[in-house]
Length: 183
Image (cartoon, rainbow, N blue to C red; front, top):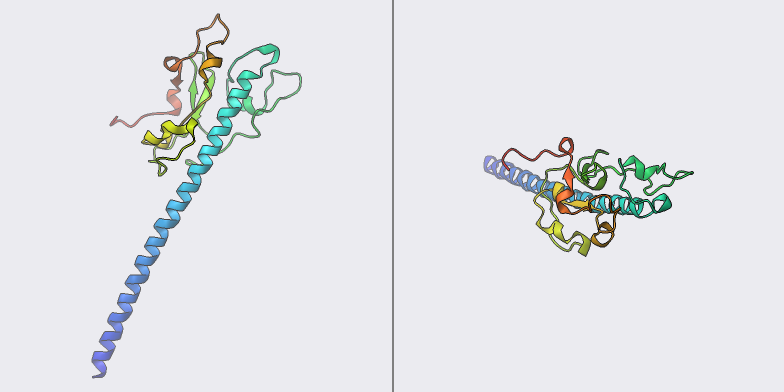
């Protein structure tokens, strides 16, 4: 009779270990999902801050000169003034990649009009974006979340000896974004 009890105890212990493993696996999935959602919020914050800084740089040039920055560093230290003007406190880290390198969206003249994450992961967030980011709901990758500082009324009044920027003039820098071979 003692051997049968030991067998049931052993099976009970194996069952308890299996349940603990499943519980830990579920906790890991929940923890990973929560972390990814937090990174998405950081990406929305950082992208919007850079987008606003680009627009501020464009609208507030000295002597009413309207031009986009040549680099993200121009947003941190705008040398167009006698004293340094700061449109952005720092160049934020892309929370999805963990790097300070952003994909750049440029005008036909090579000036930066927007940024995007270089992450090719699929986003968890699919709805409930604020109006400015409503197109993000159809994004297949984080790299499809484009933070572009082009607003149509302002862009139509850009210096008349240059063509106005429209969607066809925006180009991605090839070194910053390479699509998958399957696309």
